[in-house]
Length: 390
Image (cartoon, rainbow, N blue to C red; front, side, top):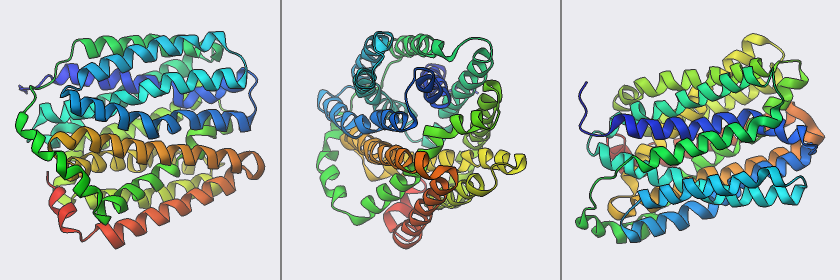
């Protein structure tokens, strides 16, 4: 099918970006454990990239909006990520590792929100095709977790930073070969709309629902690989379980444009919250049953895929014109940043002392709270109902 936007260049960026996450998310905790860090220290270190995500996207979003260009921010962020992350080999203490993770994630977290706006501007009225571009990020994640899972059954996980650095370089190169649409001066009319929308309660109900869903993933992202290894899973098996969830996510992204058209973005967000409850209860009480474990991983398509696709649509509706960059940055920093940091910190407090069952049960409760927000405050809001079909 012929497309009038740079489908493959946009897709390549997502492939590389989420390829880095596919290397980091399942294996970084194992790398840190291999370096001698305790479970509590691993929980604190895992919270750092989430914490910098609170500040960095808003700062870089403000710069991009006022410079009227986003790709320079993306390119700078990608290059600085490479340069700072390379220092990981020179540190071996907790504070040294914390400093490196703070530095590289400050620039890393500048990249995706602004590139999301670049992609959406290329798509224009065809925003429903976003999921078809974004699915390549999921494919990159799968390639990384399966490939590195097999590799780390042969070589030490100490090699992880080298693989991550190589993919980061590839990300920077893809940003160099991508262009953005010409700036539309009429979009400046959207500046005042950003502050006006922030005063609407429905915006904060939406953001809090997304925050709670992301917060609930804290034990999963921080300790799930360690948990599986303690149960005797090989690293290839661990990578395979992570990949299974993202494969399901890819299938969701392929059909998401139809799902959104039929039921709307708010309903999709509600299903994501409900999926959180089911998924974490399965891992809390039935993780020793292979069928339940597989089902929990398949639900990643709901707890992440449904959340992300619906939220991008709703943010695009809520924050228009020149406020797009700040809107995407606010969503990223509040939902993934604050939510992810609180989730990692909560996991670090719960998991070492109370274990998997208590940790995942508490996080199922966060899913219940998110579902209540969607049902009570978002379901019948006229603005979001209209935004379901952007």
